[in-house]
Image (cartoon, helix red, strand yellow):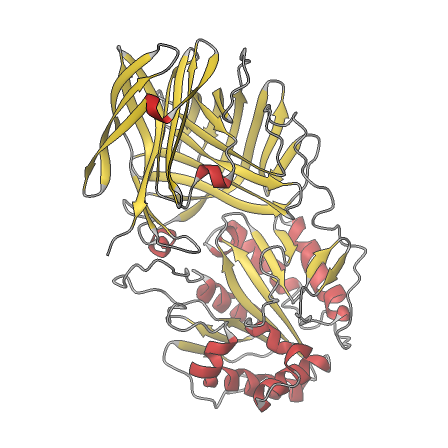
Length: 564
């Protein structure tokens, strides 16, 4: 075998000796202990990166340093300050290995294997660069970690081969590896004058073109066991992991890549035709709230885009009953094609008097009763399977444009999974609330009550820093009425902090009165972590209410700050 590392490693770190001058590093392959406390701010470990890195190393004969156990919340091997202070052995191991391989082979390539918790089969390449038009340039004080020759001779062939296999490849879309704390930046001119001799050596090897370092952020679709992961392993082995590909070298310099389509080449524009609304704003989101009473299936999710934002995001959540769900989440370059928004394989298309929504590809499925109380445990309990979704949302014409961007709509279509097929026919809501209006990261109560095309209500209560904010809309005989806070009251009955029943009293200024009781049919508990502030205990799912013998099958959410 190849070089035998002499630097001692902790028991939770695995070293694999190889045969080719390629080093794979999995810094976040550990796990958070099952009994560890739930804090307000936690990072999820990059599940399956330890197994994937091992498989890659065996496939191509590469060297590997793999964290297979340590929780990144205790020690983050991708943060320079933490490595300096608490894991100097990691820097010494990388230095020793790279120096030996450069001496033996003249050059070495290093790949850091990370996880991006979007479901789509996507690989975001970080190299200290972000797209600016048709060029890749360092953001801020970042520096590139690969040479132009390596980029053109190795990285671009990887992108071409991956996309031929249905794998999306982005350049620094979400994770450009440009932060000063990112360990990848050690392989750049940024640390050429660092006080540490070890770090100076790593930077010097990169400046001499002897080390090319790349960060791979892999979506769930490429990390979880399945055909997409096998295709990624094959593409990696033929390109990035092919030590004979791209043997020329050169010092890093300014990048100019006219052959790459720019990420924000075309910007999504809200021109009033994609979604009917009188609200034209720079950033826009759409949400789905549907519950089909016949199949018992719920359709939730939405998309977000902006005229000045470089990316769009989307999610599609399909409740299958109980705590079983199937889900897609993704992010894509912002673009609009023929009144269409595309996030990976999720496509929203303007169609007649509404929207056509389609998806065909891998989705994440889970059935654990408390899958997202601990997000990492929930992800670990999930699996990937193929799905096909085709939906048509019809927005009936109204005599009045609603003052609130909440639209009563009719949903028809089909959901095909590996083990079942569901026809969908439901009344519900499409919302165009902005993030500040939706209040997703604040304590809130949401409830939709679609009794049918002639009667429906959507109610929202959000606890903002400035006090409670209540809003609602009532659709009655084709006319939308905005509900004032004093016109309705929603009371929830709780058990162990979770809603088990609710009662609505509604008396509108239009002399319409509605008193009804209802209950959750499904309950998905979540701990929702906010970037700042306290985490939330959230329960959401499908609901049913009855008024004068008529049933409203809708959706709900109840959230409040975690205590203790």
